Image (cartoon, rainbow, N blue to C red):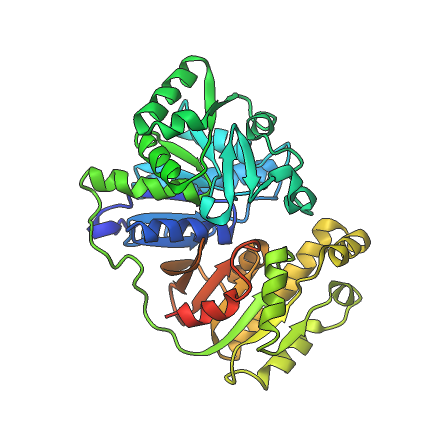
Length: 430
């Protein structure tokens, strides 16, 4: 392993994310706060050089795989980051705490703690800018308790309990406690004091309340001495200031600089979230759309070939959209007929094949909607790393792939972005 990190040294922060768009969300937060950040896709091998960056985020596709596999991949990524020289580590998961009562968040966090010899960490998925807040240990999406939101009906990780202390406690061997909002509002020293008291009382993980970015900044400051921090990307906004205060991170700008990329433009949409459905509908008013029907795929129809034939005559005349996004009722029908995992894998495989064909035909500027879809697409394109640039929407930055040919990419979590996101992405890309 070649150590060529930030300023010829090593990365300050090593991160492991449980999905691709979540990793990009985290990298976006770090870049906005002045850390040059590279995202690596999949567990790096020993021959992978350490990028010249202040932070390295390893993006996995481990959110919904079996617990043992998620633990193994996460620990392997952590081991690579440790060898790379990172001094602090971050485990990133969704701001809606996507998991089941068996995992994977709790088991992965505890495995990483054990690997690092750490006795205590936090869990804070709050992201107020996107409406995710934690109050008295309960996670809210906008004005709704998580368990009353659309996440209650998520096909893979239905969140029927918004009490994170109770929910995470069912996933972990250790005790889960709470740092309440009154303590958080008192600042970093008060939060650190609460950490100490919880450890003395035998707690190994603390849910930390947060309702504003100011809360997240205080939490980040309080985490300066923790080997491992876990949460959504929001809590990471306070970490760069710690490195800056230690004299290890420069104050200068330019963390979001990316090279320009020219080429045809396309959108691949596999998410079925309400936000993505609105984006697909809005974009279809201005750009050609090819719809992928999972049931037709299952019956053997070559929709991949049809989509690529349809696209070839339109490339270079403006962006186009290939979408498998569908309303909840349609998704439920498909899952009932094919099975939940089978339906998801069928769509992901098809969308990845479409993306590969589009790139072969000259697409170099690509927007992908949906975490699972993004993972399948970058895997099919054999993209191993991304440099992170300007923000398109909260939680979603522009990126440019490492290697040749370079591609401008926007990898969007299903729930992120307003209705005009796709057009904004192309306007913001370098």
